[in-house]
Image (tube, rainbow, N blue to C red; front, side, top):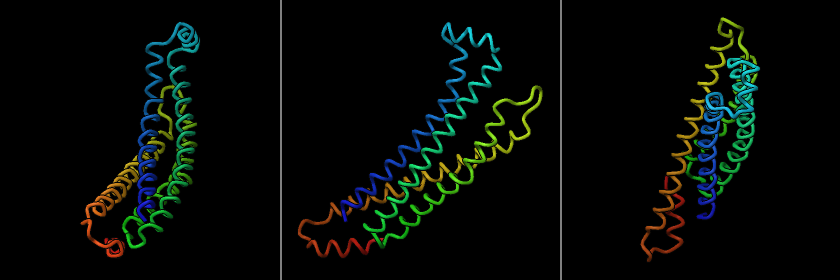
Length: 196
């Protein structure tokens, strides 16, 4: 049982670390556009002058958006696998901890909603927003940001639930390791299974 709980803790740790890494990468992809335009290399500066500053910015932001879309889709596939593994591990290791199972199932459901609902809509709208019509905002601009904010909210919710699962697993392991040395293993196993 203990090794399964440790594996569950490893899975949730990987899930949290991956989510934080992806948020960082996605943010930096767009920031790098402004950094590149502010201090381009000599060759890049020539190409930017040919295109013009605003068209170059639009093209680079479009490229950053496509990179982010690809990263999100790949990460969502990884999360689907992590979610299934985590649910199975929690089910096998602590069958009476229904709260943790519920949180893990909700995390997996949020990934499913994002992967098949929100991400495709963001990709479709984002592709159109890359090159807005001159002099006016793109008509899909607001819808894209609604989806974007919803996606970000889901990520924050998943991270919060993952932190709760992680802390619960760590605290449970510490409680087991602090039991008196003289307590019989059979009693420990029974009482440990009945913890909530």
